[in-house]
Amino acid sequence: MNELEELRDTLRESEMRFRSVVQSAIDAIILADSDGNIISWNKGAQAIFGYEEEEVLGKPLTILMPERYREAHLRGLERVRTTGKSNYIGKISELHGLRKDGSEFPLELSRAAWMVGDKAFYGGIIRDITERKHAEEKLRESEMKYRGIFENAVVGIFQISFEDHILAANPSLARMLGYGSPEELMSDVTDFRKVFIEPGSRLQLLRTIRTKGIITDFEAQVSRKDGSKIWVLMNATARRDSSGKVTSLQGMWMDISDSKRAERNFQGLIESLPDAIITIDIDFNILLVNAQTEKIFGYTRKELLGKPYEILIPERFKETHVKYCADYFLQPTIKTMALHLGAMAKRKDGSEFPVEINMSPFETEEGIVIVTDIHETL
Image 1 (cartoon, rainbow, N blue to C red):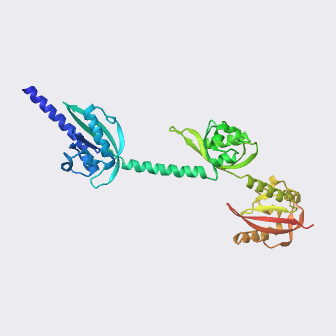
Image 2: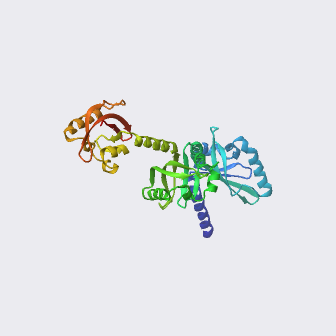
């Protein structure tokens, strides 16, 4: 008798533990009899579906399902009753549930079935996955936006491994390099090193990415499918694995061949002018000179760049000229400034000669600079 009592106590204790676990679960745990009527309902089910326990006990499971699922559910119950088999028992499915207020929500359902004598019983663990579905939808939307930007961007977008394999490329990149599609580019260019005209450019790119993790405004000349060359401006960042090791780089580039060509043409024009062209910054340091400047003043370009502009002015005129330049920086104008007649300049050898000087402002990213045109009047 004592053994029987101990067994009953053990069973009651086990049942209490089971009920405690079931009631404390945040997921819905629902049990049903062989007819598909609810016989157990936990607090998780109450929170998810909105029904109190007394409202659902003895009611069919179909009250928790949208109409479109009910017929299939009833066929499934009949199949289990007659054959003992089911295509869904032991599997996890994603469906929709129906709350007491009539609203639907996405859920994840895990089913179980067991026999007690000749009667079948069913159990289900249900998780509300509304938040997960919202997150997945946002992720899909984000991916679609990124894919749209990636596919339609006018700049070339790429991802390249440090083994020089193209991992991703958009249509613009393929077109810039003369290919009909990213797939053709990735199939044909198996070693990205061959794209760079100068191997040193690629090495500089990789070295900067490895050490700094980013590179901006990097200019390089690359080869197209037909062998022609273009200049590109590249911005890229490093991609790292879980250990922090740099494994690839990703970024974008744009074709700057036209601007490079215009720059060369402009530089050629400046170099061919008969006057000395000198650009100075707000601190009156020389930023740029042309070939005629070297010829007229007797200095090499290297001797002039970065030096104070006053080395080209006779000592007796320096104070007046510096004040004029300072006033000019305070009120720059896009129009050419006054022509200074009777001005004197000084060569490297100390000799002086008369000049006419035109001064014009030019706005750069670093600020206003002055472009001076110096004409020798001898």
